[in-house]
Amino acid sequence: MEFRFTYRGPLKGNSARPEDKQRLRRSFHLQLKQLWSLEPLKSRGVLLAEQTVTASSVIFDRAGFKFAPLISERLFLHAELQVLFLRPEPKGFILTGGGDIDNRLKTLLDSLRVPRSSQELPKDDKPKESEDPFFCLLEDDSLVTSVSVSADQLLEPIDPGHVLAIIKVKMVRTRDSWANSGL
Image (cartoon, rainbow, N blue to C red; front, side):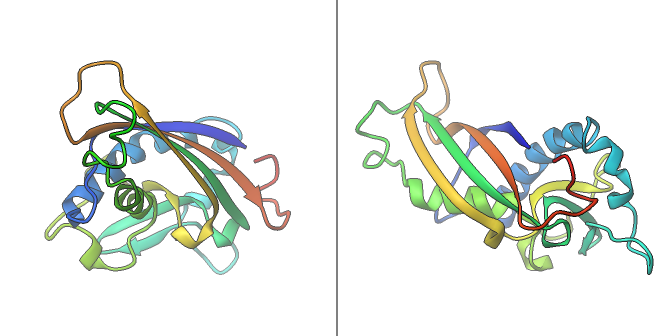
């Protein structure tokens, strides 16, 4: 299964705080929630239930949030990512003119995964009503087996420091199972 989702807004590098990463997570959550409402994921809704003795679940509890990653060891899935960063700088300035592409990529990857601890979430942040579960792409960024990054100039007005990121995801099965059949 392949799909694309986007992010438009500020994308910090070294100075990214938990609040910055959570803002990205919330943007991705809305798109992934929509993806889970479509086939073939729609018919896998049982994976979003709390884990029981007889059923598996993709839900991870973190500081009051119930995160539901699409790419998970539990589903025997890994991801290959293609990221296109569109920024206001002309070509040639993407890397040297404040582009900081490697640290921005790290911020992006961190925001695609389940936070490892409550310290990776903003203090006193609580899930909104529409964030139960809170959809994210990755259980852990170690499940990304390939990343390619392209950067180009965005040909429309956008604030400096902002990007339009287009992320293409290819889900790769490491083993066949009912949960990942047809994905």
